[in-house]
Image (cartoon, rainbow, N blue to C red; front, side, top):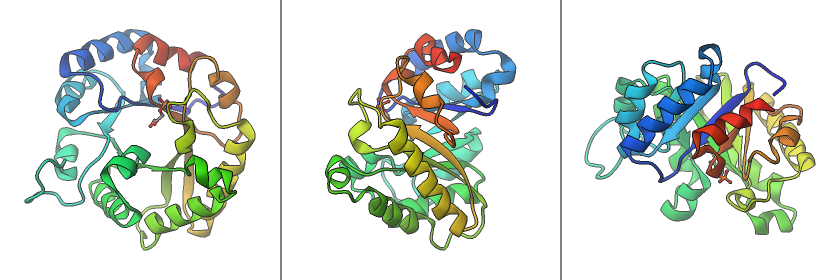
Length: 244
Ligand code: 13P
C-alpha cells in the first residue's frame, strides 16, 4: 500500500452474529498495530453493532452500519436511526450500496436524505455508486455515474470532503474486479465531478478485491482504499490485504 492513509473497509453484509463479530475483532486487533488501526473500518449488520462497538472501544478501528434511515426517530418500523448510531459512537455509515438499490429499491432522492442525516450527526457517509453490466456494455457507465452522483450531491452544501466507493455492480461477488484502467478512468471522472462541486474526493474501489489482486489494484493512482465484501469475512485474510 503506497499511502499511510490507505483505507480498508470491510462490508460484512448480512454475515456474523454478535459472538462472531467479537471474536473477529479480537483476532484482528492482535494483527493490526495500534497506529494502523484507524485505516480499517468495519460495517456490520445492525444486530451486531452493539458487539462491534464494545470490541472496537479498546481499539482505533472505525466502524459503522451498512444503512440508516434519514429521520432520527419515529414510525419507521425496522429502520436504523442515524441519531442512535451517533450516540453509539459510529464513525462511518454505508449509503446507497447496490444491494440496497437492487433489493430495497433505494434511489438517489432517498440516498441524498440519508447522506444529509449522517452529515448532520458528523458520521462519515461512504456513498456507493456504480453501473451495472448492461450499462457498461452499452457504453453508458460515465453517464450513469453522473446521474447517480448529481442526484446524491446536489444541494449538499455543508461539507467539502466526500467519500465515494465506486463499486461496479458486475464486479461485486463475481471474482472479476474491474480492470485497473477502468477504475483509473472512473476515478478521474468522479474526481472531476467532485471538483466541479468544490468537494475533495476520497475514492474507494469495491468489487472482488482479494489477496490475489490487491497488489495490482493498490497500484492504481488516485485509489485511496477498498471496500471489501467476501474477502473481509476472515480476519487473517482481511489483514493480509494490508500487507501488499
Ligand atoms: P465483494 O468484495 O464480495 O465483491 O463485495 C464488494 C462489495 O459489495 C462491498 O461493498
